[in-house]
Length: 559
Image (cartoon, rainbow, N blue to C red; front, side):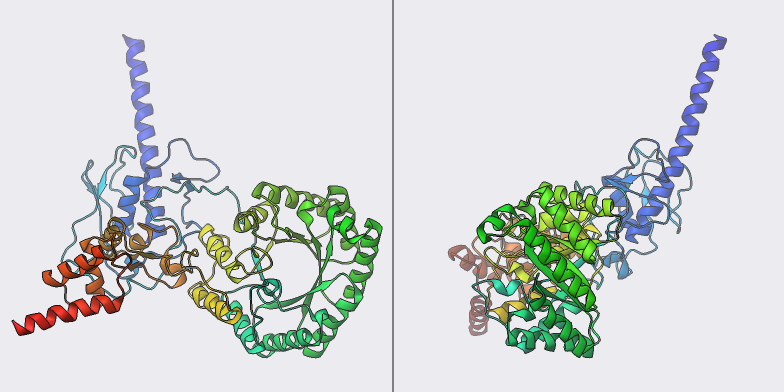
């Protein structure tokens, strides 16, 4: 019996120590959640929805929230701001109750004793009048001013990111040069181009292709005006110009840079794939000579040079190696991989970026890698992100994806996705206005279902979906309202969820639509609007709803 008692004692000690250790980990876990979201109600919900992962943490990790590592004092990159609800002060400093242990968190978020972290169940406190979300009719003004980019705490995010530091992500806007190669666009006036350039700068875009001055006097004149706009306005955005890999195209860039005093990066492009060489009647030796002569001249003129191999994603490895090696030895500071015809898949993008990195490493130089993609196969954004993760440091795109054939990678969608994934920090509230300015200047329509920017991106008339959004709104939680039926927070780009009334709507659509516009929502009005919506084959216009309201009011006055 003695050995068994000794064994039981060992087990008891083991379980006691384990429980204490788990309690300590849970304490740090909870505090990290509160630090992240700034709200104890959110922390309670997250404790219930995403319990601390099993296993012993290592390398400084104190646990995981879903698939995210949580460390003391560290807030995830994807969520750098506090939730809008906590900014309003509704739940700040409040406590939530641990039902099983009947213990509370103090102001610092500490447990009064260790808890079983796997079996702990937490519940939200009941709202008191004047605290947190109001009862009764909702406030119909926007909720809060801050934006929560990361996933809502009640969402399990399967998009687990790889561990390790985020790579640098710079953006080059090709709207004013490559975007204008679309046969369907109108070339903007110089005033419109300058306006678009200022909007790029407001979005924090790093560089802009302001034209190909070797294309003729008019283009050269516009390029000079745009360069002066950058200098005179002291814009942070930097200029670059495209050029064929010939001295005649590089000379105008050097002259404009000298006259304006604005540094201009020279991006020389040349075909690299065997199919292009065959069609043009070029030899590899000819391409190598053009590369060396042009880049040597650009560097001699004091220009920063980027070497762009057209159709890189269909070029053979040996030709690429010789071309890129020649370019770097001639003074190129960046190498641009161009998926000119949109041939690449995300796996292909990773493979070719990795290959170009190996060439740079062999040469032992510090050269950056650009990715210039097109969306002929619909992979524009996916390939750009894959290239970034593989080692590219600057991604090209154009507003609304305009460009030749099916267009360039949409830079607006790149901005949104990179921000949500934690690669960049930008104020994107002016993004819709930027896209609309480009649409007006280039005379291109924005499809209603265009992601994030389109009219329908955050609009619904479906009863079930609208009901969920309305319920979230009535809770006073903007983040919840943005997340319940949307992958992208509308507030990220300065927009709001919109509820319309149509044949697939429920009565909650009608009630909310009337309330949000300050119109009476009597039973008679709601019934009539709802009946009209069910009889219609599309959503009701504001004028149609207003007419029904006016008709009911007139009848009430007569009676």
